Amino acid sequence: MASTVKSPLIVTGRLPVVRFRSLLRSDLVHGVTTRTAELPLNGNMSFMVGDAPDEVRINRHAWADAIGYQADRLVLGRQIHETSVVPVDESHAGSGADSVETSIRRVDGLMTDTPELPIGVMAADCVPILMYDPVVGAIAAVHAGWRGSIDGIAARAVESMREQYGSDPGDLQVCLGPSICSSCYQVGEEVVDRWRGGPYRRLADPVSVTSEGLYFDLRAANRGLLTGSGVPDSSIEISDICTKCSNGSMFSRRGLGARTGLFTSVIMLQRDQGGKQGSRQ
Ligand SMILES: [Zn+2]
Image 1 (cartoon, protein in one colour):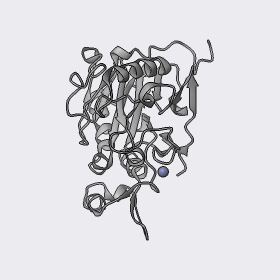
Image 2 (tube, rainbow, N blue to C red):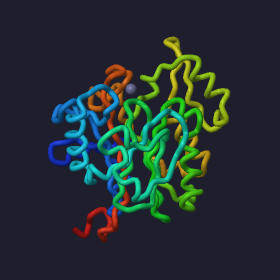
Image 3 (spheres, rainbow, N blue to C red):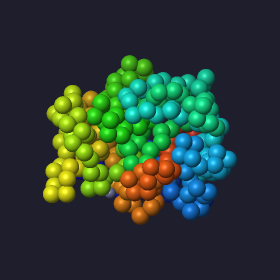
Image 4 (cartoon, rainbow, N blue to C red):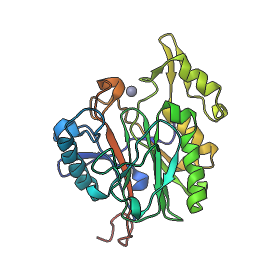
């Protein structure tokens, strides 16, 4: 894939954070948490995998400091592998930041045009997608597992940005975060049948058949959904970090088991500090 690039792993203080080149801008804060022995629970961000909540809270504050947002303002959805993408604003600040109970219910995508409001998605093999529209000043954070990918959540997010903020898909910068690679993602016939019977089958060819079985390329499926929605291919940055074969630097359900932790991909609009990419500091 031409637009697949190595995402730089940036160490801020002692914590490694994944960042995208195309989102390194003075009007944005963003980052993807990783799996690291520097933190309790290896840096798990999720309350939903049976870990001690107080240790997860320590991690949520540590990662917020490393990425550069206020932990108590983070907005998270309670993801259910569907395709709902909803707008959030100042009234939602902190929803899901400190407990699952306060998170936005039944959504797999959040979007906002409110500055200083961090929005995030959780993953551990599924594709986290961050979107940025520099023209209208809006962002989105989307979770795309195989169900969401087949049901077109990335396309739904582009359409929702257009409806809510007037975003032109041609203006969007979109980044696909660390996720399971096609070589690691063996799937059953159900996945292949649903893709081939679904409405987006002509947009990508994510299925490969080998002597070992069926494999599904979540990144290719989402790239197809995005270009099919009018996002220029040159505006899509895809992390080459595989959650499963990255030597334990990311959480992976397939690699580490169903009760493994989750990492979070966060994006926030920042009031422009002046100057591009910190060049006027
Ligand atoms: Zn892999």
